[in-house]
Length: 203
Length: 203
Image 1 (cartoon, rainbow over the protein chains, first blue to last red):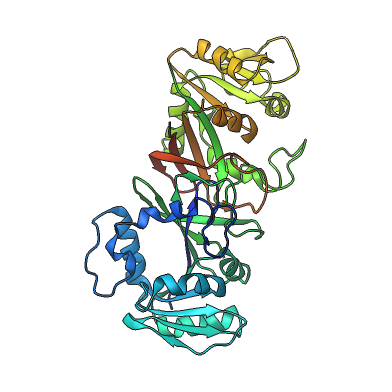
Image 2 (cartoon, rainbow over the protein chains, first blue to last red; image 1 turned 90 degrees about the vertical axis):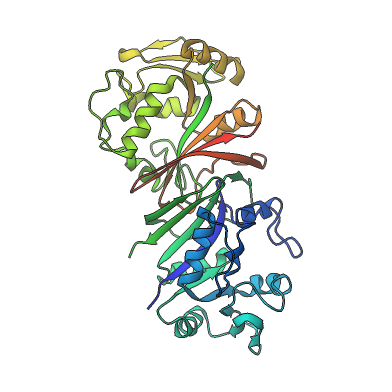
């Protein structure tokens, strides 16, 4: 069974969005800068064919994630924000499970992406994701809220932080309001504009 | 002229103290874990004789700071909290300048530490610290408040973050309320229980 990993970009001062995130500007003021390290990395798009890809530390990190990930978990909010920009051939190219209170039929996109809406809670969503992921990992992408729920339920195995040299001053915090927790640093990959840090959640 | 560097340990979620810091517990709940990476590092004590010192990445970082630092700036609060534990032979062994509103005569301790109280503001304190530091750097140690003032005045050159694999959930934030700012990552030193990150403040 693969691991459950929360993957997020974060500012040096601990924010995963800028201040005042809202519909139309989900990353908040200045929050788009959290993701510029991914620009120019062709294989950021999680393509199964593995074509392209800058031979950089950043690209390696995205490639590692791509190869090891079998399914993705997201919250309803991220789905609503992402559906349009991700388009008819979403970059993830794998099954995605949306944790939501609103039932909806599964949507099948091009390139291997499906959106399955799970209304039975986070454990059911994880179970369904694990079933399709097989030995690969399940990745939580996006909002801190769903990741915190998995953390608090004791289901989160690892946290992958892409630490961006940026002060945002305010915004959505990593694991806002979670309990204190000691982690174990397991992997550091240096790059010029971001530091990729992997932590194991202590049992 | 040396650089002005803010040096602080910080949790992964961006706090430099735990929740509810107060007199008698200045680091807040769980905040002492921010500094355990320094334990067992003899030369953390900034000793001029350079004796001891674990040959670890962490010790190297402390040694680098020691060799390059000529004076230290602290706020009044840190002085009040630290004076007693630092004792008659304080670990810094160099001139220290306390930014305060309360005039007080300079205190001379053993081992080269002096506490000079500066009531003319942060620029005067920096000027006096630079005078004794010569070509060496001036280090800001402790609270985020004084560091933020130097940052906002455009006087801060670098930030040294000792990123500790720990979630604190609440506490004093790095540069609370500062403007958004892009930094430049200039140096990463990996260790097993902390990541030492050096950032240049963009001009």
